[in-house]
Length: 271
Image (cartoon, rainbow, N blue to C red; front, side, top):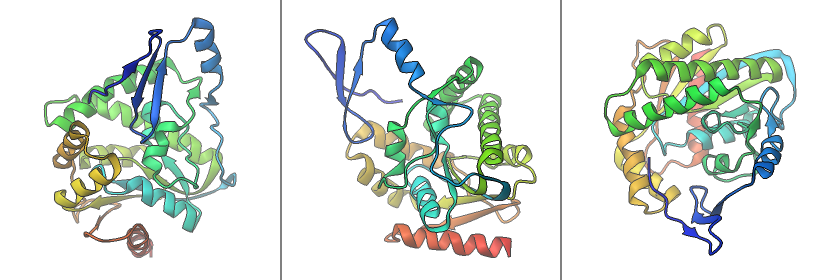
């Protein structure tokens, strides 16, 4: 999707680069023994550690924050967790097979997600299905033809994980993940039927979106071009779409103001 530049060590076994998490990172060649040890150091896929109260007897609301990149889905999810005791599930971690429960101490959760611990015990079929879907996500972002059914399979797997984890942990939930079209949201609604699901689709002008992306990722032209191109692929929620609201974000709104607007519109929906 983009090509990072790196420096190869004199020994030829370490690549050092400036990563997407705004820090210096490395790829290191590992022996088979080191790879095995690394795999075992991950969090269990069937019960990732999290900081939330385990209360499976309470199955509350499920807010799914969607919208194009740079609109504050992850930040809003984190603030809802801090302010209103929502369980915050960062669904982009599902693509990377990492722990989806991010610490509330971070400032930029979408960047912190890239440093989450990997999950061990992920079925190979899930790994393969996600890898295939990533090709389609990239194609959709570029505005070229993609395989909708493979994307639907990807979201079905994600919904299975969310459903299982909600039953295990309980409480009110907020999921942050960019669901681009109503057709995919309809599929998710059918899979999570009866779960008090509400899609909260964030929206802003493309000019303001570009400014936010530059503030987060700097002036990397490849990253900016890829993320802004995806703007065109996202549908807002029409009035006739069930269990979905569009939250329009204007220039200059603070993070807290965005979350307050989300809370207000969610309260109106469920009242």
